Length: 223
Ligand SMILES: C[S@@+](CC[C@H](N)C(=O)[O-])C[C@H]1O[C@@H](n2cnc3c(N)ncnc32)[C@H](O)[C@@H]1O
Image (tube, rainbow, N blue to C red; front, side, top):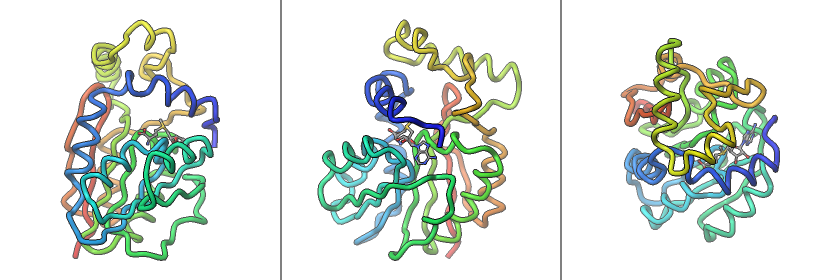
């Protein structure tokens, strides 16, 4: 994986100021999870466990299985969350982790799947759809590549306008619509990703948030 421990440290420090509507996005992801007694949720690339913490607070008997490739992130996630959080070291792009020994009621991910290329995303959505229990939800918050050059200019401008510390945002060259880094960031269009969810067999596919090139979208495994 091209993400490094330096990237993890930088994201922990700067991410909260640079992600549009960070808290609102977490709440929307929680709203999308079906309320079910004793549910198991898998969070892909859980980072330092912020979304997991929101989920565990909202659903007091849920277990969250937080997967990430960064030992630093997983240590922070485990210490933030108590024993209903199970930390797992993994490589998102690999296939060796794509079976689970528990029923998977939902799969969530925030700001990570764009590190995969288009074909890898398509395979991931297909494999995750197969792992979900009937009625389970796959909910993704991520950066989406606008379909046109004009859309990319608009998304870049909206992202600049939505950050809390614009000078630091510019200095870090964080706006990937202005400073693309294809080694690390490979966002796909929202349209392609919705199509891949459909091809994966998910239904009730919808978009729940869209701003500054950041989208929350997902689908449900049919009963
Ligand atoms: C931008 S951070 C987002 C973290 C968290 N989801 C959040 O929203 O706060 C991206 C996360 O993806 C993880 N990551 C990136 N590429 C990965 C890969 N190939 N395999 C596993 N984890 C990966 C990083 O370690 C990091 O925790």
